[in-house]
Each structure stands twice: as C-alpha cells, then as structure tokens.
Image (cartoon, rainbow, N blue to C red; front, side, top):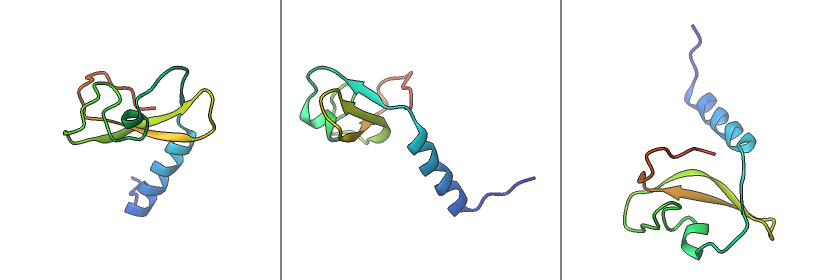
Length: 78
C-alpha cells in the first residue's frame, strides 16, 4: 500500500493544474467572473467559492482562474 505525504499530495495537485485543459472564451465576459470574484455559472458574489478551472480570452495571453459557488450540479473541473 502506498501512503502519500501532504507534500506529495500538494505536488500532485500542482501537476494536475498544469496539465489541465484550458477553456478559451471568444465573447464578452464580465470583469467579476473573469477575475474570480463571482461564480462563473450564476454570477453570485456573496457565496463561498472554490476554484473550478482556468480560462483564457481568445484575444489575450493571460490565464485566469475561474470559481464556482457550487450552483452548477454537473460542474466540470477543467
């Protein structure tokens, strides 16, 4: 049986983030959603949020972390 230390789990999470897919958006996106201040799906700002993926505008090079309040029951983690 293999036991992973906390450090090993954190390194694994970072590696998964680096290899995860990237959502590319070609259209208008609210400032709050793009900057992780509001839920990507419903736009809520007063709920507890968690990171669910990464997004990039089609016309830019910067990658943004997107968040969700859990409102979308079939949220796909990117």
